[in-house]
Length: 231
Image (cartoon, rainbow, N blue to C red; front, side, top):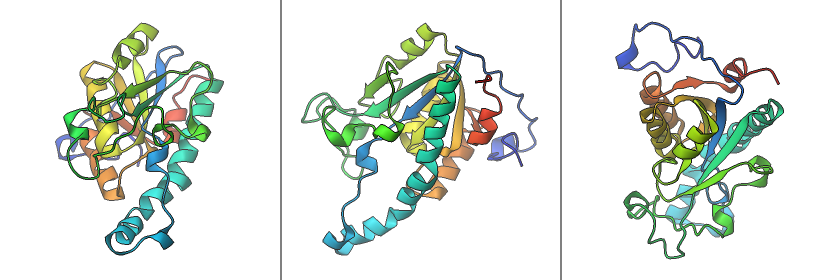
C-alpha cells in the first residue's frame, strides 16, 4: 500500500488514485509546526503521584514516538530540504503578553490546552536539534492555525511557494488546523505521517484519514523525498 491508497476515508473509497505531485525548486517549502520544549520536557516521575503519575504514563507513548520517530524524521527532512536549496519555515505557539490575554479563545479554555507560553521563555522555544538555521523564518502564533494567527500566508505567497509540506504536532490540533487553512488558501499540502504526532496513535491516524485527499496528501518521509527536486 502506498500514499495513494493509504488513509482513505469513507468519502474516498473507490476514488481514482491521485496524481504524482510536481515539486519544483522555489515552489515547495517545509513547515515545522509547534515542535517546542513545552511539549517535550517531562517531570521526574519519582516526584509524581496519583492522577499526575497516571497522566505521565498515559503520555509516555507520545514521547516515545516523538524521540524515536518524529524528531529524527523532521531532522532528516530539514537536512534534505536545506541540501536541495529548499525553504524551511517554522511556526510556534506562544503569547506576546505574559498574562496570555492575546491568545485565541481556544487557547484560553480550561484544561490541557490552557497553556501560557510567553514568547521569550524557554518552554516556547524550538529545540536546537530541529530548530531554524540562519535566516529561516519563524512565525509566532496565538491560534491553532499558523495562517490565521500570523502573516504566513502572505510570506508563502511572496516567496512563490505553491506546495507546503507539513510536519510537527499535534496532528489533530495545530497541524490539522494549519493544513485546512493552507488548503482553503489554495496551497497544495503534503502531511508527512512519520514527522507528526498526536496525543495517541489513534487520534493521529484518525485525523490523517479525515484530512487525506481533501485537504492534503499524506505521505511517509521516504515517499515525499522521492518527489523532491534533486539535491
